[in-house]
Length: 225
Image (cartoon, rainbow, N blue to C red; front, side):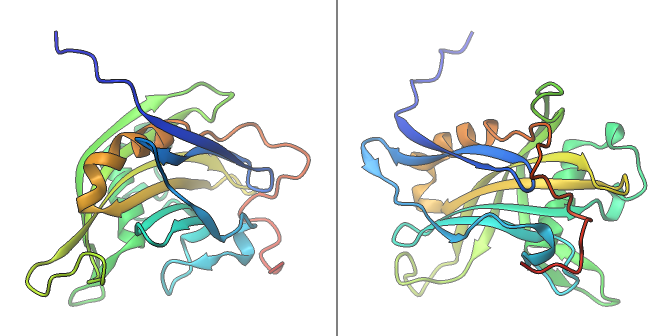
């Protein structure tokens, strides 16, 4: 058998949002080096969140950034779309879920208005975490072309971002399934150091049973604050 992986040298903090009822751990230090993640978007309800695209389908409900390192940690929420829409979630495959989520995150349009993802899915899997944690989750690793930056751009080559993401499913007020996705990304040159910590953070993502302050994504669509 292959040797066990080395112990993960990282520290984590916990973020829990009672409004949309999700929680996860995010890294605060890796291999002794601090990762100063600070909120750029504090947790908020779906109706007031910033859309990822013009159709406002998938929205950023929480985001943390470490500006100097180019690291982003975000939670997005949106209804099932594409090949997932109108299909029993029990039959969804990991790659179908990953492709649907990524199509809304970073896309191009071809003739006829068809949306095409600019992300490459490196791996995708499905894991059951039990009813108290939110049921089935879809974890996937993906790679995307990034924008040139002063940190890594050398004027001669493309820049890339690498990420771990995980998607859970919860029914909205009207019974329609909504996708809750945690995405942790960094520039490709930091992946060897940060990738294992990102994977551990993705594995911590849960959708606990809603409490008193819970507001379903499809409730109060007119409310912006």
